[in-house]
Image 1 (cartoon, rainbow over the protein chains, first blue to last red):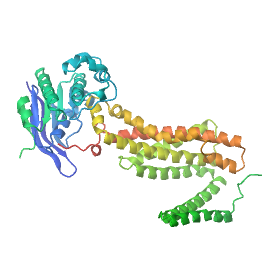
Image 2 (cartoon, chains in turn brown, green; image 1 turned 90 degrees about the horizontal axis):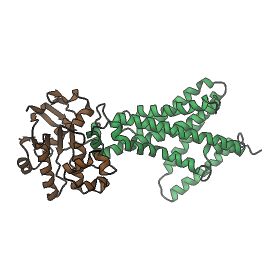
Image 3 (tube, each protein chain N blue to C red; image 1 turned 60 degrees about the vertical axis):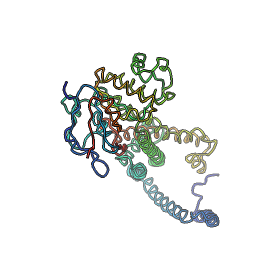
Image 4 (cartoon, rainbow over the protein chains, first blue to last red; image 1 turned 120 degrees about the vertical axis):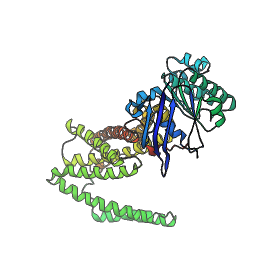
Length: 198
Length: 261
């Protein structure tokens, strides 16, 4: 399989100095790619360029060989789902947020079907993070962007989410995961992209 | 006759200044440090009212064609005030100008077209000034509230955007809150009208010798006009603020998101 994403000489400006400068890399379509690097290196910024929550100040970002800016942005974001560090739940039940396929999706992310009628703000952090994954999967994405998906979780929930993320990659989704934890990257990912290495 | 209009002389105004003296004395003895502010406020109100008095005399006295100019100056001042309050929103002055003009034009237009008030300076200027000053407050409240809320709830907003929602959809709940917030003062005022305070227009008519029943009718028109005007202003300010806080590609503008990592 070819490249899903490509960064070409990307620069993103910060308040004073560039956060990212002259960054180029390719992310293959298959499997799980971990983006690692020290905090402040710009990993989150790079991830946000892939679903256009942000745009580079110079350089290009490509999806399937085409500039991401050439796609309809709403369609791009549906195809390339993003799940952040801290799970964000909206007011209402789990079912209301996940949509009509809630039963199948909850099963897919390892949540009991009984949670469908629970108010989302009453979930534990680990459950909420799984629900966010279910909500993202409900859009039938081709790619999943995960920003430190386990950093807010306890050890038990962390192992569960890691196994789930691995399974989603094995099911054929392109998964790009930002992590500051080299152990997590080497255990989980098919390849590692290092950001901000000296 | 109980008509007070024309009965207040400059000597009476001078006597009323004694009350300002009282507030100065209180401020001095209680060490509130407000003497200077009181003096400035008194001086400004004196000169501003004197000036508008001359202007209105001139406009009412056969120069009705200047009415739009007076209203435009009021809109300009309201724009500068409200735009200054909301200046952390890009294009705040432009948003303020549009929302205040929409409120004034829309509301005053309806009143004039339906013939509820006559198209004369004596009606258009005071009513317009009330709409403009209220719309100014609403526009300021809506702009600053939306900006603060979208900044504080950046994660939630971006979670909505990430699911493929438009910026309008992603900001909807904060948009509602901001417009509500901008509308509540006038709604509360409308609810307690006559119970807590007799509002300005009605007070003015009573002091000028009008009958209470005609004073309340005018006051009703004024309250409903202000409700309408503030709704216009809130709606326009909210819509325009959202269009300035997101890019055309449904991204939060950079000053609202500080991303590390």
